[in-house]
Length: 297
Image 1: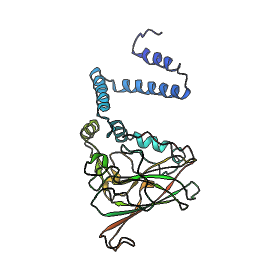
Image 2: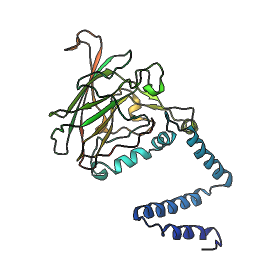
Image 3: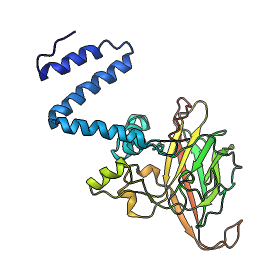
Image 4: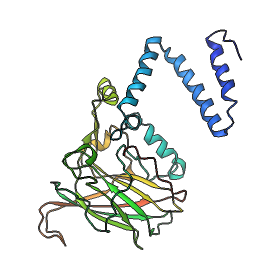
């Protein structure tokens, strides 16, 4: 065991211990983490009180995380880490565009199985009707049959059903299966952009940086089938400036869906007033079909 002589001796001593890690990938991660973390502490000359505050913040974030809210996922997005990890690991490791995106903090397991073309409205939800049509293809552009596809989004007041007691359980959520054409169609209501929670640690950070808390309106997609890497997607349907100032840094060009407003009667539902159609083409990469860890229950 090394006796620490001065501050310069700390990092080599810790790296020596990290080198004993038997798992190669864990050894690589821990060695790099210690190297950069120690360099950060030296660069900003972190004070003792700042270090104590930092540990207090992490403890608080853990306490703020529960079955309905994940503060660490929210913070990761607010620092751009979630998007960076996504883009580094998709689209030929960042070389090309990808329709892969952020999972977000509100995906739930066991979405209700819904007939293709059916509605995901499970309680009265006022708002303009939205008719979605998503086409799923492989990297050669061929449609993918037999995909399980979860669709979910916030309501027209900007709340997911787990945040809003007035909504039925699994409202605005559904699981679909693609047919030979690789298409999922669904009926819903048009979501709006919404603020992320600001009464927690992330909100304190945004206030200190004079940042707004808004996310642009979007529809979430999770698609999986053996032989393909699970697609996690946010298709943006927003028409505001939030697309270019997303608090979670999530918008890329490949994620913007084609949203069209209509005032004529709908072909099957008749005169329903103003309604919207949403189309998007999503590409899956070959790989392991593995579901993510649900951020909430």
